[in-house]
Image (spheres, rainbow, N blue to C red):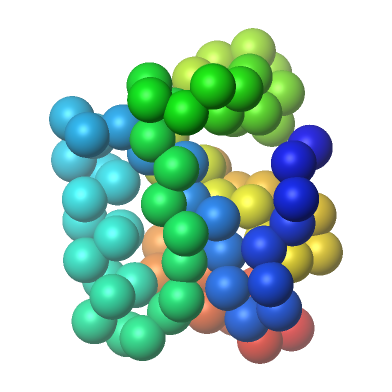
Length: 85
């Protein structure tokens, strides 16, 4: 895996055309959740990270947390709970 996000933030792997990505991004922005967005179609190696987490599938949004864990298409509540744990 690549560099882990800073404590209190997440790395969000996305694509430009993903509706679930846009929705979660908007919700996280509204809630003040800090994140770094990585487009898997534009960033070398990003698709491979997503595939590793998702059993070979390029499923987005995939979020990586500071503890190294990941979640695929999580709810805002799940993101907030995992960041505060």
